[in-house]
Image (cartoon, rainbow, N blue to C red; front, side, top):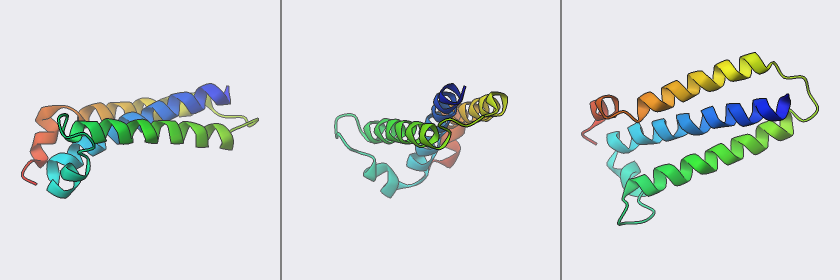
Amino acid sequence: MAPAAAALLAGGIGAMALGLLTVLAEASVPIRDGLRFYAPVGPLSGKTTVAVIVWLASWAILRAVWNKKEVDFGKAATAAFILLALGLIGTFPPFFLLFAGG
């Protein structure tokens, strides 16, 4: 059950990373500019690239740490869904535009 819990929680961590990066890019010009990995796409290219890297890294780390261990799948799933919800909130314009001005 540990590999499934690691994958699920990593998905929540990746979603939270995307939401957080969206808010930070709206709030800070230096962060927004730093996330412009590909000019025609703008900061979206950096937000998604960094979020995918965070997702993959967290999955690898959790999988290694939880290898052959008993993991409470219910707690991992609850944490994953909370992180997913927070990440989704961070990507909604009515929310991230509250931080605009950077």
